[in-house]
Amino acid sequence: MNTKKNIIIAIMSLSFQGAFSQFKTTIPLHKDVTTGKLKNGLTYYILHNEEPKDRASFYFVQNVGAILEDDNQNGLAHFLEHMAFNGTEHFKGKGIIKMLEKNGVSFGKDINAYTAHDETVYNISTVPVTNEKLIDSTLWVLHDWSGSLSLTNEEIDAERGVIREEWRTRRTSDFRLKMQTDPVLYKGSKYSKRDVIGDLNIINNFKYPELRNYYKKWYRPDLQAVIIVGDIDVKAMEQKVKTIFSGIPLAKKVAPRTYFEIPKHDELYFGTASDKEASSTNITLQYVLDEPLVKDSILSRKNVMNSFYTSILNNRFKELILKNQSSALNLGTFFQPISRLNTSFNISAAAKKGKTLEAFEDAYTEAERLKRFGIAQTELDRTKKLFISSYDDFISNKDKVDNDSWADKLTNYFLKAKPFLSAEDDYKLIVGIIKSITLEEINAYIKTIQKPTNQVVLVTGSDEDKANFPTKEAVVGVMKKVENKTLEPYTKKANNEPLIAKELKPAAVKKTFEVPGIAAAKGYTLENGANVIVLPTTYSQDQVVLTAFSKGGKSLVK
Image (cartoon, rainbow, N blue to C red; front, top):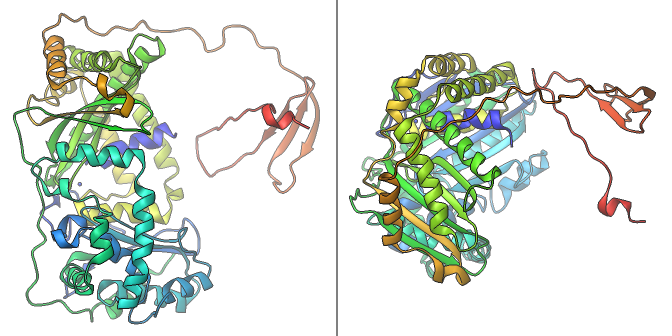
């Protein structure tokens, strides 16, 4: 796991001018992005990027998903995603896949799609840009996805079996547990009735017009975006987009794209779930929070402090686990989007056998300690250094960000108004925020995260452990006990010991060797028999990666 990369993702994923939705951002779009909206409502974003060279990625983004299905359409948003590869106006049958694979763009690896509750996203990646005909054909694929799917009876029936198999393979232990806990987390919301893959009875038996009705109602240009990122002539590509997509019609009367809330509640919601294949017992406390509709620099500042908060609390959790001072196998805290309008703050514990309530008490105690006393100056200083270091790495390697990473960020800009900045502007904004956060500010903010409303506690585990799951009353009792407990502030002695205290004795180089196929690499055999290979590279600036291994186990069997 790349910790520094994850820090940047954590901050950015918590911050969200959707082209048409209620979400807005006051932070200007990256100036190198060419964008516009056609008369039919379709939005486009085009960005030049040269990682990799001579390649481009094409994304087709729908601001609709399973949440907009009627009850008799449960599962059809995902079914329709499959049908996008089974015949269109300009590409009959499997014509899309055949055309692209003939040109080295492979299905699954470079051609893919996903359906979620609130969006459906298609991508065609690593398309060679030197083939003008291929570029035009790829744009026509996106054009056909907008409103020209064939949706023949024969292809629909053929796809039912494919969906049935996916329905079966998706039903893992985690999925089955989620099906039991979602009605608790999403109580009173439509999200509790949609799992994207859908109802198997509907998949097997829906009438053909029901799929076509969903397609006609929701697949339309005012809810769509075309995103193109790659080693391209932006102006020429923009003209192609205007020529190909402007002719897509938009009906005079269209259904409003509505958004679904999770009802607020003062009472703590409690739920349990068990499965025969569950490997551990987990207890999670979730605080359901509103996702701000306006994404501005104030929200960016809050998101940085959220990331600081979870990073520091997770470090304290890690100390408990490493010192074996907890009834938990693992403790964690994180923020997580749970709907288009909501995020949750989570405190979670994977319990040791028969210690679920005790593990939860350990987690809640540390969260309460942090809330009550705040963080220490040394923790803040260390966290600032770590986060700034991750952004230093990011800015050093800004030219190595690939097309799909930028396209994904533009997807979030379109759907959620998540700010899309140049690498330099993003660095300036976030690092400026990091440096300016004071101990008093973050400690005051920490007290606002955990509130006594909109709480959900979920316990999951194996069928055999179900009898030992704690009750709602027991969990509430632990929370009250901890809140009234006398606690001491967190302290940690500074460790000024060197990483290696004793003097190291170098081993002489016995011989050197070449590494076949990698001219820049140099090999050294030391007098103690160890082989060392050094490969200089400019791909990841300011970073040295060390890997060591010794042959053992099965490799020693004759």
